Length: 248
Image (cartoon, rainbow, N blue to C red; front, side, top):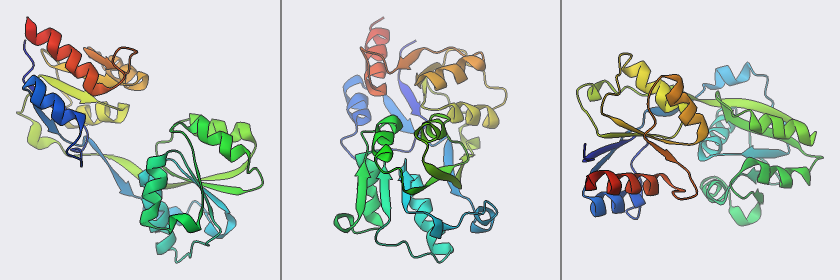
């Protein structure tokens, strides 16, 4: 079956230069975007039960934009003035750049990793005397606490936001040729919204080993997988599949 429609389980890109728009135009396919999951802030009352005193920390580890938003939200709700000498350890340039929403970048001590947490941990290791706070979601990859424990630094986790399944009931009678997933949470959302989901002729595209495992654990078929050496991005994997499939 030819590919004509694709649903990407993420919000629509905010930039017009997204490779998804190029893909849609070049391959003459319709691409829709819909968040299968979303983030909600944990109320300050719940955060207080974690016995987090923001005065006790000299450095903040920020792994995502959500971590940035919810750290400053909680600081404001707790009436905590973030000191000017607070150190920020950001997992990527994108996170560090986003931090400018809340602080004057050039006047703060900001350390930037190279996308992965093990890369950031090399910078954290050079500041072992700091007391680190890790703002996180209720779902935290084991890699992060494991890396911090290996470093032997003084750190504490604060759950400030949670991942919630989005309501997709309006899609009940809408069918796409390809569904695109980027996390196990997206697969969970699919089945919470549609417990009787049957794959049939729908192709499933997945990014990352943990997502592949989540698909297979549900006895579904993985038709398109990324990243691979040949197709390091999801759009490249989709384009390759569409070109080969739509020729037939």
